[in-house]
Image 1 (cartoon, one colour):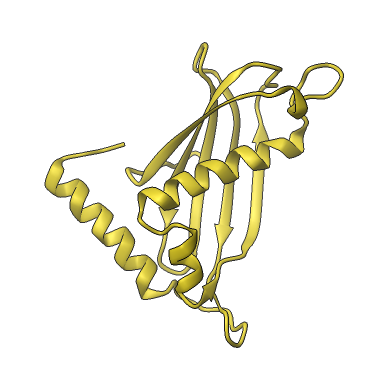
Image 2: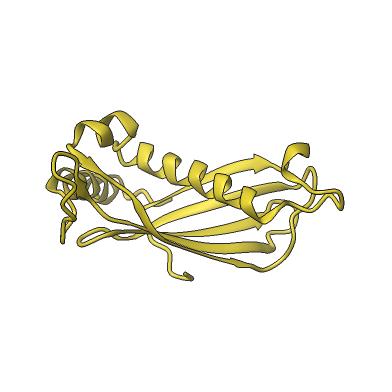
Length: 150
């Protein structure tokens, strides 16, 4: 979960009242929404938004999720969630790092693994569809041309 890549995107959020318990600590389940928002920001950056994903002819279930909580976040904390695509051939693996914007301290680390499943027959694919790999390759080529990194 500690590995990151140049294929990444940050998502900033502020801990809302409805995310905390009576002690004003973020309930662990709400971190999943923070991860999801960062994942979609990353997919959008790759040009693989929801419409493209749906039109691909594949379903993209998350088959594994791991979270390591390092420190609590509390009401009104401002957080940055960095989502990094670290594998994209056989499966899509995204590592996440959630940090407190105030001091840069780690709040949590996480990882999601997604696979491609054909929508028509629900057959698991052993490699990711070419449409996704092409989007990643195009992103990397553009980053090389512009010298950009995230």
